[in-house]
Image (cartoon, rainbow, N blue to C red; front, side, top):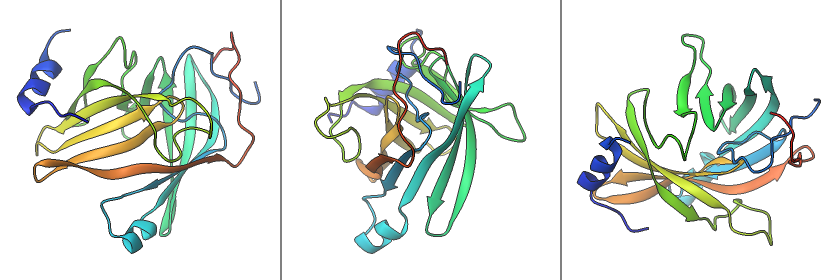
Length: 207
């Protein structure tokens, strides 16, 4: 991927501008929501033995209506333990639920077409562009390549930079970190499957 100068990117960023839940057809959701969906991630920047040791599995445990959106519970499993989070998905937005606040914005409502720049928990974020994706685990065999959205983030206190590729119905599929003058892949989707039967989208269904 051709990279634009940081100054140009900053200028762009700062310029004006039921039992089983069914998602409505024709409305991309850039996050995992289907119950049973299980995703495997690795950090390719690590040496092979450590890469396998640090591998993470993310599974959608539960997905249920929450007002005008969905409350999605995910489990994160590594060799050293397991944790659980709940996010609210609404109108393209994804907010992590916490005990101390009403939620931390991961993606804003209106993402990616109506809202393409936002501040969230100490970082500034903006949509860089779209790209067809051919990654392990990104799509079923024989299916058309999915089109994802690249988002760049800058941590305001340290200036650390990342680029994350979000895919419809999956969410994060690849993350690049700016290290010593180049982009390095630090998180990559390597497997995709279901531990329950997948839910098919149905036209006209309400989330």
